[in-house]
Image (tube, rainbow, N blue to C red; front, side):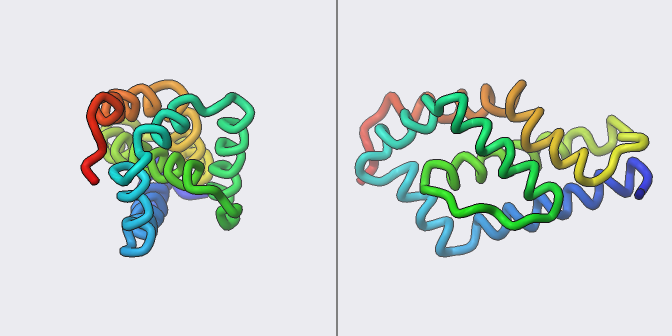
Length: 141
């Protein structure tokens, strides 16, 4: 098992690689249409209203990914929410990197913490603060 500093570095590399994948042209186009296209307000509201069973499914998908498994097939809302978890986890992980040592934690445990536990406690609130203004405006196109 890598030491805490090495484990957080490896976890951040995996998160960044996954974020890059979601930022690839094809997925980015889908994500932009999801957030800004016609019907975006309804889609974002549906994402905000995600039911607890659906949230547990995404938690398990994120945990499986942390263990090195591929993402399951997802609808557009789930893919968008996973992207948001990765983005929030990456930002929080970079901030934590030099503040917390993560002694005795594996890469998998750190990834689980960043994309599941952090999302449940703080990431979702931060995401909501960014999404709320989008719900209060008319679609751009």
